[in-house]
Image (cartoon, rainbow, N blue to C red; front, side):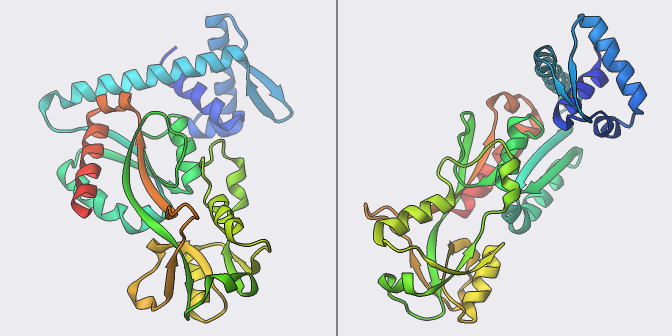
Length: 300
């Protein structure tokens, strides 16, 4: 089983579809099917079962996928070690970042990193934090930068944290909130398809804070898809909202009150860097992690 066979297994497992996997590998479907049969013949097991138009890995197939992932990681590690014998950092780096971090922080970070290590090939994914954590769990990226607290048992580093606050265009009394129109940022339904989720979801934390104080539910008059939209609606006097303070600027001139639980603890929204200790043997990953930590320390 060679490198291409390993990639074939990984894409079949990811896509659960022969046509999509063939497209990823720039192969025809008959050629892909032939290679699957050859792998099955080599190991004397069936690796796929068909469910309508889609396919599913058998237990033997799942085992081979994990084996293929280990081979690909070892092969990449060996290639990068040999390339870096000349002391100039070479290789690839796969990172995934939350959309907000990708918009406001990542461009300048990557510009400096590429300037220091011009021969590193970068692959970047941006999206919802839940999506990015899934990519890390599946081994499709080396480093994840996400907002929110996830159950990640390997290495992590806190990049920043900010308060969550009530915003309005005029002074308000907290006890009056149930009678006031609320502009709420709703969680996208697309997140339900991902395997991972934060262990203290943002919406649940706000709900807990609310239920500590009120019996009646909030008077939600608008459901919008971004914190920026919440902010702009509030600026026009259309209601109040609860958003992370990172989405506020001094020029907004809004009244802001931090969310504090009854035990005195402030509600925080954190940005984390997650990665695997094993990936630190890759020079490209190790240098990126060190650079992110150094940059973060300078900003604190």
